[in-house]
Length: 124
View (tube, rainbow, N blue to C red):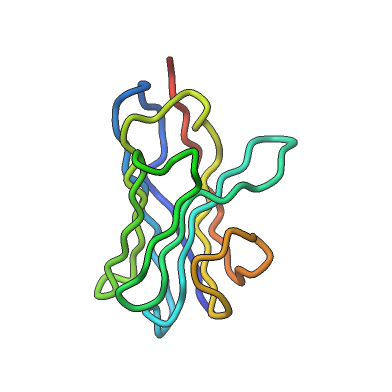
């Protein structure tokens, strides 16, 4: 069992930067592949980025590649999402997620655990 708690959301100006954190409780954090998804009201949950278990290969949605960076610190049981040059269309609730079944998946249904979400609002 893993519990995930996101932090770091808030209001940021377009072109600025924001760093989201996700702290995981439980054991064997390094054996989980981690991901970030986002969702706007009335829309489907959308893949943002993922990182594999251990050292972790990284995967990005085309819309954020080159602007966002996912990283993990297994010693701190934490995964991060560095958001550089955010755009107003990046405004969403961002969710941290964990999976032991698949690494780098863009499909939300392969992830087993989810955080409560953190709101990110990008102003023009």
